Amino acid sequence: MAVGGVGCTPSISDKDIKPISIGELKALTDSPERATTLLLVDPRPPQEYQALHIAGAVNMPLTDVSGVPKDTDPAITKFPQIVVYGHDPASPPARAMTKRMLATGYENVRMYFGGLVEWNRLGYPTETGPKPWGDAAAATGQ
Image (cartoon, rainbow, N blue to C red; front, top):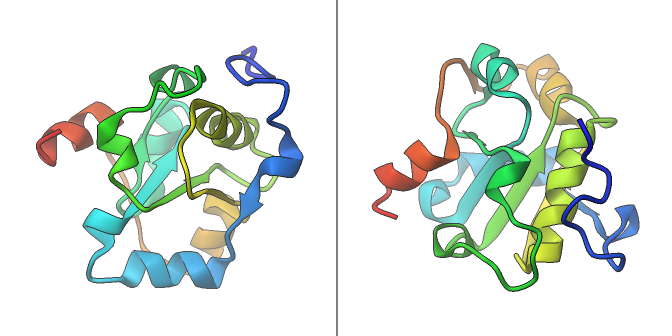
């Protein structure tokens, strides 16, 4: 899978990725306003996502984000907080998605480096099954 730099401008690098701590993410996921304030993005392959993911996360493949500056989707920009996570801190899909979202022009994009491994180890809510981004957007009227 060729994800390194695809769709990202040269000005976006790993240095531009802003982390979110486990405490900050847990507070966001516990918020009563979560459905309108947090978009939790899991860019892993659908079969991995369906096997186990953070509760409330949507499965969004890299191809759903263009990487073209200012080519943003209103269904995504409506969220004041966007958090991308992967399997673990070394997750190439999560890094690539975070950089692609930044290159596209999405604001308030952060990466949860602990990933599913840390989240699950701490016993925080997870779920199984499909919830691809297109279905999630349709369910919210986008």
